[in-house]
Amino acid sequence: MKKDFEKTGIIFNPDIKEAKNIAREINRKIKNSEIFSIDNFKKDVDLIIVIGGDGTFLKASRFYGACNIPVLGFNAGRLGYLTSCRPDEIDYVVDALKNKHFTIENRLMLKSENKTALNDIVIKGLNCARTATLDLYINNKKLCSYVADGLIIATPTGSTAYSLSAGGPIVSPDIDCFLVIPICPHTLNTRPIIIPSSEKILVKTFEKNQKLNISFDGQDDITVSDEIKIEKNQNYAKLLTLNGKKDKFYDILKEKLHWSIAPKK
Image (cartoon, rainbow, N blue to C red):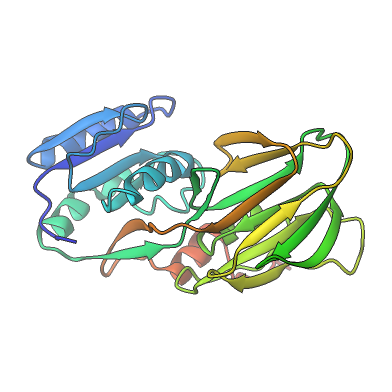
């Protein structure tokens, strides 16, 4: 991948206040850059800058991962776990890009049914008012049956998202693995499991007339009849991080999730 960015695409979320103004400011300071909509991605670029929240960043990262194009995020949303740059750091970011003071990280993605997820794939019964019985197979061998509200299949990047809320572990994004986390299981001995990313995952339901709702990063949803196959995507999301900035995994963990901060007496 080349590190000379001849053309930069700037994407902003129009639903977030001030995102468009930030995009215009970046556009003024980066030569040969273009602003375009989150609903009209263009491929003739070398770098993508996203202004918005993590949802906007996830959508862009999935799309441009298939194009081998790196993505950098400015946080204009709430948490901004993936969008590590602040609007008041535009000059600093432009200078770092110009001087090539950055790293491009490969992030694992999942795939199923011709769709991609950077954070997670969530499997639930179509009737969300009741639990589902879900059988988990690893490499075509049955591992266990879950009676739960659903299952989360997450990447290390997604371990700090829905997976964390459901009791899953936090996993460094440079570890080559996937997480399987039951959502509100009905047995006390059911626990999350971490598996190599090379494993093939199959989830089945044998309940009569039970269909499954499959959600990709909480943005794209499909319905399947009996089973869903999930595996490692051959493409990686390309996340650009700036050298010397607090944008590495452990720094973000402490800053965004207040990790290692003792409770006040």
